[in-house]
Amino acid sequence: MDIGNVQNVRRVRNLRNVHFIRQRKIYKIRKNPYIELTNNEFRKKYRFSKAECLQIVNEIRDFLPRAVNNRGKPISPSLQLLIALRYLARGQLIIDYVQDDSGDLHGVSQPTGSRCLSQICRSLASLKNNYIKFPLTNEELATKKADFHRKFNMPSIIGAIDCTHIRIKKVICDANCHILHVIDRWRGSAHDSRIWNESLIKEQFENGSINGILLSDSGYACTPYMLTPILNPQNDVERQYNYTHIRARNTIERLFGQIKQRFRCLLRGMTISLENAKVDIVVLSVLHNMKLHFKKHLNINNINPNDNNNSSTEDSSEDDDYNEESESDSSADEDNYNVVQINQNRGNVARAKYIRQFLIKRM
Image 1 (cartoon, rainbow, N blue to C red):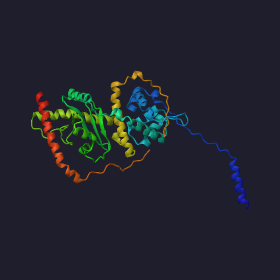
Image 2 (cartoon, helix red, strand yellow; image 1 turned 90 degrees about the vertical axis):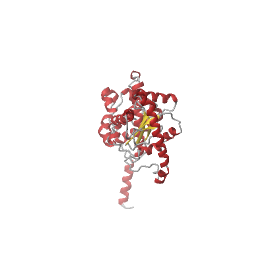
Image 3 (tube, rainbow, N blue to C red; image 1 turned 135 degrees about the horizontal axis):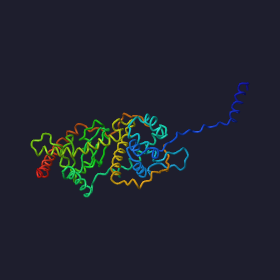
Image 4 (cartoon, rainbow, N blue to C red; image 1 turned 120 degrees about the horizontal axis):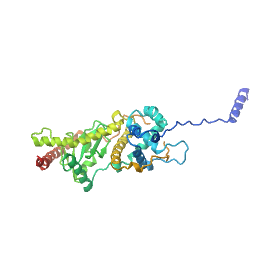
C-alpha cells in the first residue's frame, strides 16, 4: 500500500470520530390574528368575523389531520383556516402571497402555506352537502316559492339560474342569493344551455321530481319549468312580464357580484392546478352559504375566541390540460334538434299561460 492510500484511510478513520452538530431548525414567529387584530381589521383581511372563523374551524376540525405532540411546531386549525381565507380573499399568486403577506402575517413558509390551503379547501369541500342543497321536499319548495312571491310578486318560482366564467360555473340560487346547486366542471367555451342540458338536476325537472320553475336568461331554452324573457314584447302585459322577470332573475347576478367581491381570487384568477381550482370553486360556494347562514343563525356571544388545538400540516403549478368528458359530436346534436324544438314550443305555451294566470290578474 502506497503512502497516499494510507493517508486516505487515516482521514476516513478520523472523520468517524468527528461529532457533527445538526443545525436546529429556525421557525418564524407566528402571530395570533385573533388577538392582535381588531374586529374590523380581522373582517377586512379574512372576510369573516372571529366568531364565524372559529365556528368554521369547529365544523372542519374532524377532517384535518391531528398532531399527537408539539414536534415540528404544528399549526393550529384556526391559523390554517386564516392562511387559506387570506389567499382566497386576495387572490394573488400563492408564492407572492405566502412570502410577502402570509409569511409576515402568519409566520409560515411558502410550502407550509400551500399545504394549509390544500387541506383547508378539501375539508371545506367535504361540507358541500351540508350547505349546498337543492330543495326537494314540498315544504322546502313552498318556502322558496314564497320568498320569490313576496319579494318579486312571481309565484311558483324556486330559483334563478345562470353561468359565470370561473371555468365555467353553473349556479342556481334562491331569492336570498343562497346557492342551491353548483356545477364547476366545464370549459369556458361551453355554452350555458349545454351545461344545463347535461346536468342531473335537469332530469329531475323533466321527470317531474321537482315541482317548481326556474328563471333564466335567453341563453337557455324556454321550457315549462324554465322561464326566459320575451325577446320582442308586443304589449304592456309582456313588457311587465319582462320587467318582473329581470328583477327576480337579477338575484343570480347579485350573487355573482357578492362572491367575486368577497373572494378576489375569482376576479384575479387562481394560479393553481385545474383540479384544485375546481375544489376551490366549490369551497367558495360553501363559504358564501356559510356567510349567509352565520348572519341568520350565529350567536357570537356563545363562541370563545381562544383556540389552542393543534393539527399538523403536509403547490402545484398551472396545468393547461383539462380532462373532461369528450365533446358531443354534431350528428348527436342534429338528432336532438327536433326534441329541442318541441320543448321550446312547450315552453312558449307554458310561459304564455303563466303570464295569463298571474300577471294579467294584477293589471
